[in-house]
View (cartoon, rainbow, N blue to C red):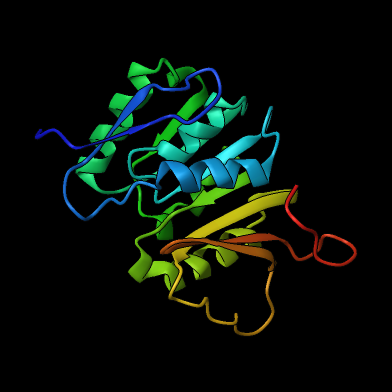
Length: 200
C-alpha cells in the first residue's frame, strides 16, 4: 500500500505517536488544532465507551483511548482506510480495547448493539455526506445505542449549516464550534432532563 498521510496523537499516554491515514481525498483526518480543541471541550473521557463512526484511520477514537477511554468501536467500510486503522491499532497495542467493524454506518446498528450503549460518539463523515450522517445518528439513538447523558459530536464543513431535523428527534444540539473550515456540532440524547447543556 502506498504511504499515506501522517498524523499524530495529540495528548495522553500515546502522545506524539504517529498514525497512518490512506493517501487521497477519500479520508480527511481531523487536524491537530481541531482535535486538541475538541477534546479540551469534551474534558475527561476516562472510562468511557467510545463509538468512532466513519472512523477512517481511527485518529479520533485513538485519541480518546490515549486519554483514558475504556474501549472504542471503530466503524469503517473503505478498504484502504480499514488497512490503516488496523495497522494503527496493532502498532499502538490497542487491539485488546478496540473493536473494528468493517461495515457501512448505515448497516451497523445490529452489530453495535453487542457493544453499546456508548457514552461518547465521534462522527466524522465525508462532509458531502453530513446530512445522511445526521440521519444515521438519529437512527442509532432510536435503537438505544447511546447511554443516558452521552456526548455525540458531528464534524462538518463550517460553510455547511446542518439541516433542521424533520419530525420527532432523539438528539438535541447543545453547542457548535468552528475552527477555520471545520465545524463540530455537539448533541445529547433528547431525553436528558432540563435545558440543553454545554459540553463538559
